[in-house]
Image (cartoon, rainbow, N blue to C red; front, top):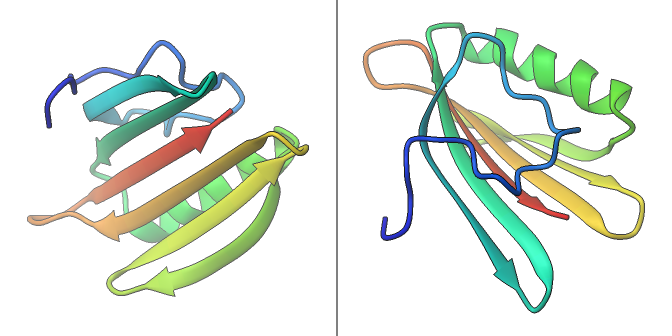
Length: 108
């Protein structure tokens, strides 16, 4: 997409963990009405189950409240919030050819 690069955006919140050993496939950060928004796609060779367990436990340890963790088609969607002003949504799904794609959108 226009404006995207294969990097974690500068405005990506430091309290949203990046899956260990994953590589960014694309990322973009913008400011909408004074609120930073970031989106990133990570790829890893690990299983979707391992990635899900990592995010479930690590988001909570960083102070996030998991509002939902629901199957979404071939993957799992996690929605979490922190305080009144931060939200993140993740989609964890099997990648074509093996491994896992992780899509993360943040609004903080």
